[in-house]
Structures are given as structure tokens and as C-alpha cells.
Image 1: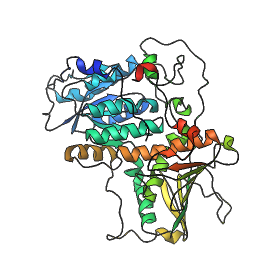
Image 2: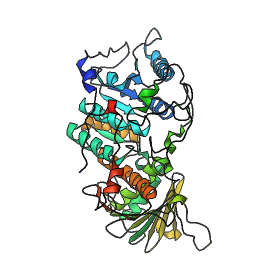
Image 3: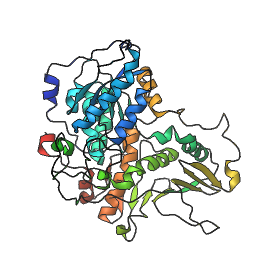
Length: 433
């Protein structure tokens, strides 16, 4: 197994006297509401913030980001939303931070929502788990495979409730849920091939440096990633409404192969029943530079193919987010709907006595309910890690350009020291022991 790291400087955060959350007029008692802190409030984080502000069972008490304008903007949004609960029409109960460790030190904080870039998922999640905070973390779960194992182990040890933001398991009309149930119940016969329609792998960052804007802690944004000059492509100035392109670069993420792939490969893993496992072989195409056609081979013989599709009888590509091909039919499913070939495959609904997926129609609600009950969420840390691992393995396969044998139990490549070096990344000195 890969060596797990512990985190530097955490002592500085925990040694300081903890700040105390004060509950303004109109707020419910702690027994009635969960107090939330938000780590990362860019475009995705603001979306999550708006959603949770509409939920009466939670109280947002703190926000954190490396860009000052974003914390101020989020603070104003929360206070404006909660102001109508008070007789005076005002609300002042949201603390702002530039360092998430200070947020985690808040006394009375129950849980955190993490919506940072991928390279900043593992460390905040691990420290939140160690602090006993429940966690909702964006996907893909980590920037590299070793960090995913570290995170999953720490969450398990801390016994906190964790939800990976793989909301296709709960939402989007239930299309993915239905597809998985049809596969589980043999409606397409024996599953043979899965095709996942997402973009290409990550590439090294080649962006030019720019002057750093005031109010942005660029060094903190980089965190464990390699040092480089500021780029507004990676960390946009102020409050922005788009998804930044850090997703393209391997120093921070895994390209579209990991960004949307973390959603669609997650559904494939679910359908395969490999939520706590993975493939046994990674086979890149003859020309890895094309960034498509890589194959994942599973122990049961099922082959999952990245972004390569066959043509149907009408000559059109059988293209969708997830395509499940069996001995007796094909299911094509996306966020917009589900269909099959032949059409009769989906004619009969799944019966009460047949296999059904975990019941969930609201991903965030599922997390909150599990925090209350102590039950496991629909996409816990181990599951999120295993789905993200598919993305990491795919990126490694494209980079190395050769067939790789994978042990999903030990989570190492078999007899391949060079490939195993790709599983982890040495963080910058200030973020390691």
C-alpha cells in the first residue's frame, strides 16, 4: 500500500483558541440545525451555497476562499438570505476566512462543504475528518490516486459522514439509477462492454504568468501543487461566473477525462458492482496522443472504453454519456434521458422483488439525512475514491502509452515501478512532513 502523509502546520490551527459560533436572533438551536462552513466559493461553491441556503435544516456560519472578494460576496449573500428571519431585518452571523484551517477550528461547527480545485480536496477533507466534521466534497475526489486512498482511510478512521458530489447517483431524472437497475437485473443479458463519452486526459500546465491581483492569496491557491506564477485562467480575479480551466492541467486536475469522467465512470462502476474495487488492466490505444480509445479491463471480462463508439444499424454512432452493451441489448443513458436497443428492453419496469439501487433523489438531502442518522451516504469516500481512481488510471495510461496491469486490492501496478511512481505526487515542502 502507498505511504500516507500527514499534514504540516495543522498544529498551528488547533493550538489557537477556538472561535465560537454565535447564533443570531431567529436561528434555531444546535439540536435542530446543522452548522455548515464552506471551503471554496467560486462558481461551483456559490452554487452549493445557494442550494444549502434554501434548506431550513442547516445554518451557514462560515465561508472561506483564497480570494477576498469571494468571501465577502458569499458573506453578503448569506446575511441577505437570513436577514428576513429577524425582526430588525438584519443578520450578522457569518465569519469569513482565507485559511480553511481557521474555519475548521470554529467551535460548534458541524460540517463542511468543500468545492475547491481538485488538488485541494484531500488536505481539507483529511483535516475536517480529524476535526470530527462531516463532509460534502466535490468530485473527482482527489488529484492523484494516493491522496484518494489517504482521504478514504482518514474518513473511515474518523467515522464522519462523507458524501462525494457524484449527484448522478441521486438526481437528473433518475435516468442513471434506472440504467443501473436494468443492467443489474439482466435486461440486456450479460454485460460485455461499457462506453463512456467524455473528453480527453489532462496536460501539463503551460500558461504564462500574470501580475497577481490584490486580495488573492496565490501561494495558498497553489497549496501542495508545484510553484508557478499567477494565472487568471487558473484562479480568476474576484467573483466569476464560469468554471476555470484549471481542470485541463495535470498539476491541479485530470482533464475532462476526470472532470465529467468522475460522474460517468462512477455510474459504470456502480453498474459493475465495483464500488470498492476496479479494473485489472489498463490498455491505451495504439496512438495515445489521440486522447481517446483507452480500455479498462475488469476481472469478469467486461471492457470499459473511453470515448470510442461503434455505429448502429442506421450508421449513426451509439453515443451517450454511458453506453451499456450486453448480449441481448444496449442501454444508452445521459442526463437528458435513457433509451435502449431494441426499444422493448425498457418496456417493463423493474419489479418490487428485483434488485434496486440505494434510494436517493436528492444528493445533498441524502448527506444531511445520513449526518442525522449516522448511516452511510449513497456515495461515501471509498466509492468516490474508487471512481476517481478510474480517471487517474486513465490519465496514467495515456501518459505512459503502454499496457498496465493493476491490482485493485493493493492499489498498485503489478511489477511496474515506473507506473507506480505516477500514483502519488510529492507536495511542496510547506505542505508535507
